[in-house]
Amino acid sequence: MTDSLLVVGEVVVDLVVDGLDVASTPLAVRAHPGGSPANVAVAAAGLGIPTALAARISRHGFGPWLRAHLVASGVDVSACVDVDEPCSVAVVTSDVSGVPRYSLHVDGAADYRWRADELPDVAGLAATVVHTGSLAVALGPGRDVLAAWLARVRAHGRAVVSFDPNVRETTADPDRVDALVRHAHLVKASDEDLAMLWPRTDPLEVAARWLEAGVELVVVTRGPAGAVARSRDGARVVERRAPTVTVVDTVGAGDAFTAGLLQALAARGALRAGGLAMLGDAQLAAALDAANELAALSCARRGAGPGAPVEPRRSPRAC
Image 1 (cartoon, helix red, strand yellow):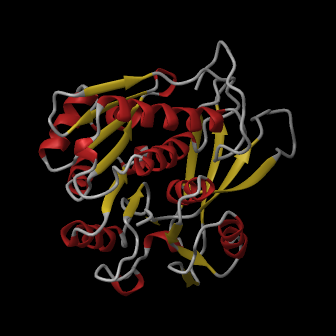
Image 2: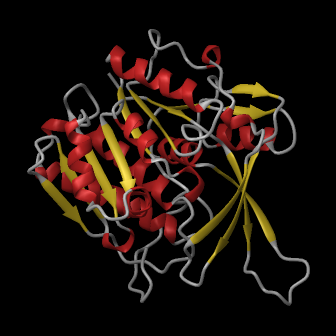
């Protein structure tokens, strides 16, 4: 059986400001489709994984444009819900290192108002992997609906559950993240996420706690330092460095990593019941290398997604 992916969460309009030159009027702003779950879905579909997205998409404004982008990217949108609420908007500025800063405009937005009857039926779920995270599981009123649905997916046992907290300062709730982690088999989190949630705790200690809670594999991304994975037995730690590239921006790099990781794990037969816990060190290292490479390619272009292949090259600044 071919692995298939269902991603659940938000689709966001990223308004990217091309430099905050105080002498420039007006500022140049570009609109990009974004949102962590949507980015993962687009990147995964581009890697050849049959991918569907469950999202609430506005009928108005940017909504039809976002839907068209998903369709053109090969994402199945049959699980998406058409609604009248507006789209979420994130204004993105970057510092001199290319690190993005987000200003979120989400009040009353479509993405966070899930009802139970809008989500796919768990018993009839066709996907072998379910991925979620980021804003949709953190913002009310829909977050509790999504959490309950995710718990049912894990309990039903037909799909591997992947989770990326992808926290922002306004959504950094350690208790909620811990509660959501208990429904996941695979957790990918950045070291920045973990520093925001537990500033005085070693990321590998957090990973060990999550493994004790029932997670099978935890992967922590560390920007230019690459990624480290810790498995269920708690003793196995695999570390891999990232390729060095000239950074254009890092928007969506973590989502590209997630898609690359899912594709690499699926190719090794690990996204089945018990498969993650049975990965050998060499297989896990190869999966981290593939994910790191895709994230690096994303850093070498503007906007979310890896885009066309880019040859990694040496640079003082690395992703």
